Structures are given as structure tokens and as C-alpha cells.
Length: 202
Image: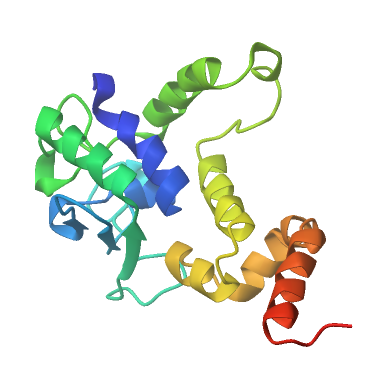
């Protein structure tokens, strides 16, 4: 497989994908313009279930998106930096079987053990030496949490974050309550600025 999976880690941090969603992504699901924002239209997940638990006899099940009807998709805007990464990836590696963006060395579905191994290697280079043995970003799925936290910190409305990542606003509130509460000062500054602009000051 080599570098064929490397861009997927970036896709999680800038698009909030679940790993199983990135695994199932196809070229036909991608709008990757020469400039500006693009879109990934998520249609299915490919979680590892084991051959004995799938109708097809394959290790990776083929399912609809989590918490949605089986035939419902989820468009996710992606920033120019991710558009460029995916375009470069496709130029170098092409597509795998079924037109999937990511594949293993045989063109098959990328296994969870593979991207776990790649992420463990990447952490050594990405983190300060004293943090490598810590639980910080210990799992590939933690990249999704990092993305959601980044969006919250940037002031993106919770309803919009929930739409992009395929959760309910209630789930975002519950799981990231500490992140939201931790930015009371920033929220106060925004409210103060709005009051000043409206002339409603003491």
C-alpha cells in the first residue's frame, strides 16, 4: 500500500470523516475543483465486520451512513488544502477497485490495521518526543474529534458542525461540552463587540 492511505489522515482532520467513511469514498463522490472549496458526498461506510458477519462474504461490510436512512447521502464541504491533497493523491496513485479513492496494494478495501499502523508511525513525527507515549491522538478516530474541536473553536455553529459530521446537535453538545464551556471569555468578547456595534453599551 505504501503512501496510498496517507492523505486519509488529513481528510479526517479537515473534513471530520469517520475512518470507515473515508475507506468507502469513491472518486465519483468527490468534487475537486482546480481552485477553491470542494465537496465530498458521503454515501456509504465500509466498517470491518469479518467475513462471517457480512452478506457478501467480504471482511468489510457495506453500509449506509451512521444514523441515516440507507439511501441518504451527506455532502461535506472540504477546504482548498484538502482538495489539493486529494488531487495529488489521485494523480500519483489513481483509484482502487470500484473507483475508491483509497486502496491497499491489491486495490482492495484498506483495513483498519493498516491505517492504525500508519497513524502510529505518523504520531512519532507529528508529536513532540515527550508526548509520543501519551494518549494524545492515540487513535485514528481521534482525528475526527480534533476536527470537531477545531471547528467549535473557530466559532462554527453547532448545528452546521452536526450536519457536516453526521451527528445530532445534542451529541455535539454532550461530547464536546468542555470544549464549548472552556471558551466563555471568547464568547463574551463576541457578545461585547456585537453590543458595541449596536450602541448598546454601559
